[in-house]
Length: 135
Image 1 (cartoon, rainbow, N blue to C red):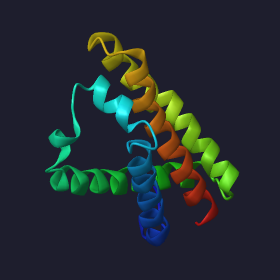
Image 2: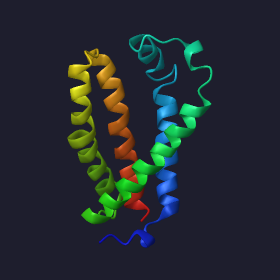
Image 3: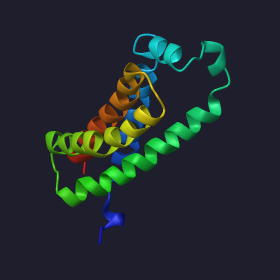
Image 4: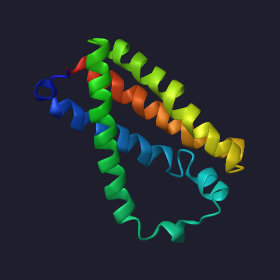
């Protein structure tokens, strides 16, 4: 049984916030935003009313960070590197491999898969590092 009450909820919030801002950069014009828009067959006007998706994206980041905090606890990670390693393993081993079937069956462009999965792997790696360090 995981001691849910003993989790550091401030660290979970910080990990979610860090991952959310990573996504803001990742999908910005300075990151992979232009390529992502083109590969998704979207333009900037399509994202004009994006407040609702942004809110749900942050809520999703909170759920991912909470769940990852449980995994970090289970593995006993107590440093940034240990937490980041757990996050990287989860990102590559569970998230990107799960997305790979979307890539295959959805006939995604390989670059789109790399952008989408790459962000998610980086998110859980960063969040894992924060959660491992700041338990």
